[in-house]
View 1: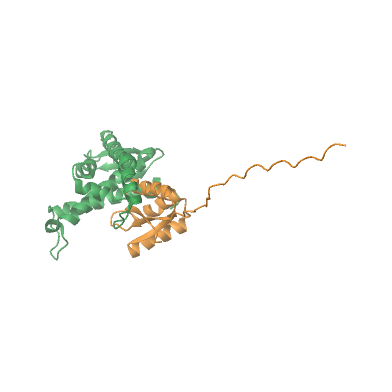
View 2 (view 1 turned 120 degrees about the horizontal axis):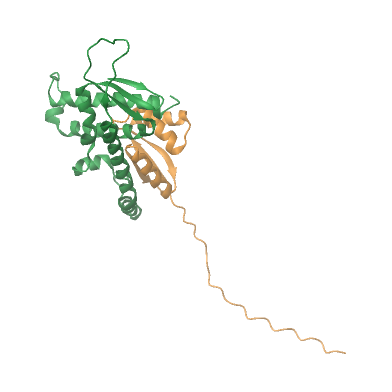
Length: 180
Length: 103
């Protein structure tokens, strides 16, 4: 896969089937709605832990009623944006420098500039969920002395995490943080 | 010659209930951001710039403090504002919460 800054935003170019699979896994991986534990990781207590006063209780009530639904909505919309953009994947164009090369089985996914924040958010959500999985399944994911072997859940998780982080970094440097 | 004017009777003085102003100074609330292994450092800096309007140097300094010490107070002030900031930070998926300062 190549990450290309375009005049309209960013294009994920020459995306292989395996990479496309990983991209299609962003939203399902980020799905926080099915696990109460994961929800707690996504939406931490707005008041620091030891605080149990009238004010803290009032803040928590306000939080559940007003703030939390807005945050959830924003995160879910980001996932939806990624799903929609993936629907726009199209076969990669043949590189002009290699006109006789066999057609590559890759696709190209344009990400409009206005979707940059949503993509960053959805990828971050997925990495947050992956980190939660890593921290809470010590038997499968605990970093031990044995090397990761290809095909293991730990190996796949690390690949997925690194792949998403790479795209995030590119989005951050090219779209989100113009001053960097 | 006109008779001298009689002094007007004084209006009865009303007894006002004793009042005093009690100033309740609400202790400020701290907005705290915790370190986490997911968020990219430059992104945290960018969020501090956007949410609080901090200059890049200050935002970066706070981010590094969180990275090295596990957490940092990133803002202090009124409760409602602190609630707003925590919401903004959490919507950027930063691990943020608030607590009232010690008396």
